[in-house]
Image 1 (cartoon, rainbow over the protein chains, first blue to last red):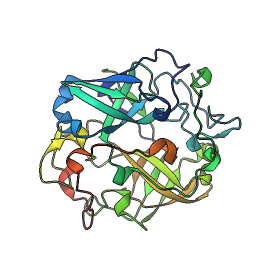
Image 2: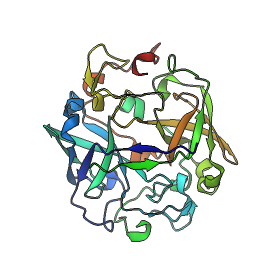
Image 3: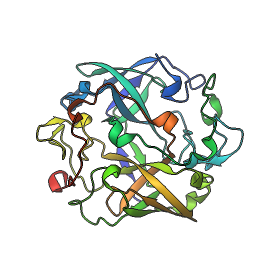
Length: 160
Length: 160
């Protein structure tokens, strides 16, 4: 459990958000926000058939978060919760996931929408989104129950 | 884009599957399969309130995959596709995601179900699953269209 594993980004995510404060906190709150993925050209062959999917899941690094906290007060509540019960970026391994809309692909550039990610974010992986595998009907959503209204909820600098 | 980032697993996933061949290829195909997460006890505090969620998303390492391919023939098709248009483990960064059912938590042990993950897998992160953020209605599912029938589809050794 103590062995480190190292990854090299496969590309960089570009978006209109140049600082943490003001970034939408979920794709749901980022309708119409456009961005691009600049894939390392070495990996272009890996994009074959990806344009068939309307949605892709991005796995990336919260690269502006320098330390982790095991309990945090997330943007959507005023009480502390365990970091693994939140999506906050200040995690032991600062990895984020977002499912975005794929608009088009030109060589190594993917045009995307519903981008809740800061400009310059290092990308680790891209996976196709397939509702039959990825959607869930859940019984319980814990502290998030009744907290789905994101109107005006944005990132601030608390996890910088 | 060339800077490496290193992670240390936060725990280990245990499951009934001790070899790659025969592992269900998605949680959808792993109904009733039980497993556990053995979290590094240093991170117990980060579990506060997680038991409120019926589903959690695990981010983990495909640790038995030693090399990547940019095009693969996935388990669910007989034609090659770009690696980023598939969920195959032989990715440039061998990172997997699975949403599983959370049954209970005892100290640093999380009991889970619908486990499509091999025993001994290093875990990088746990996130709560929230349908309002995570479910999607999609327009296009590419080569997976009409391929959702997983009856009898299991992993074999092609990506070892």
